Length: 253
Image (cartoon, rainbow, N blue to C red):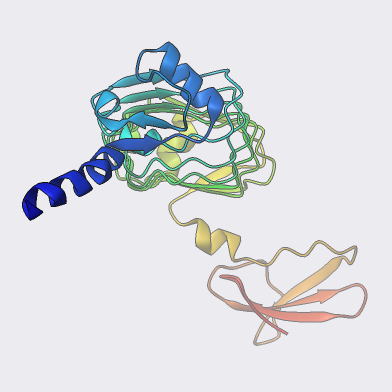
């Protein structure tokens, strides 16, 4: 009798555990339209979605894609032209095609999506992307963002057949496997951007943006010289100021 009562007590919990929380009504309505759900109640039966391999929920005014984590078999996700500000794809490890174009994403972690071959992330507000673990990538589109950092050094850059990253005015350096190769083959970048095998060394150089004008540069022996890498140098400006710096970017005032 006690065993039967225990089972009856646990049944509602088991039923609840089989549901996936979907708080966005626009997202859930589309799941209903596609036959994965029946009632608009902020949940969908997990068994109905965990074998889905392709999902298109584009242009539906969706602001929250919570619930996508239980689409564990998903290989292709189209969620462009929505109002997404965040997106957690850490559980969608089978994903190989992702289109998040025209949302308002500021960050996106793709470190768990190592099978990804296609990424479309244009027209967002992304400030940084780390694709160093996405070794299968062949197509990358990330125009019209706010990128300041892009790590594309994944060891397989020669797989790329299409790379577009224009209209990212604050992106001055892109980390890659081979700067010469990327410069020759990936031309859709801004004129202010360049490729490097180590952006940290380039971005570490202090940029002097004030109105003062550099007059001369000296080495520590007092000899006039030009810029030399990995050397302690002294800059003299027309306003009388002097700045001593190590040319890998370490400034010593």
